Image 1 (cartoon, rainbow, N blue to C red):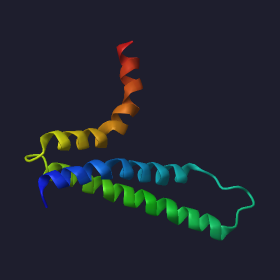
Image 2 (tube, rainbow, N blue to C red):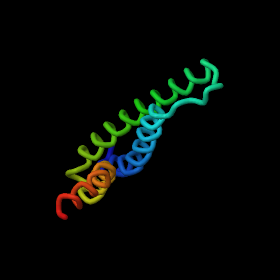
Image 3 (cartoon, rainbow, N blue to C red):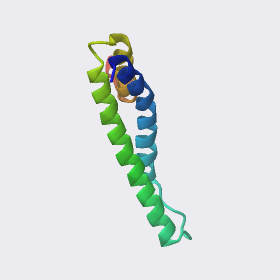
Image 4 (cartoon, rainbow, N blue to C red):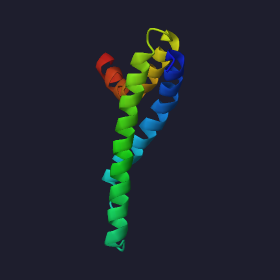
Length: 101
């Protein structure tokens, strides 16, 4: 695989992976409605775990692809790493504002 192709795949894979991780993680927090059947709750539970697991695998694949493409496509690889780190940075931004104040 060419390094530029790996960087492009990593750029596409990063947002998809974060959406899967977010959807799977947020599905762990929600409580079902009181009248929901056990089968439907179990199905929601399994889909949430599957989405979370697939998102983590996609994040790992995106990191590996971005690392592989670093020597050949530095800008695209750096952009992929930025996409992979953006949710962490956006989450920690209020903490840095609080420390600076």
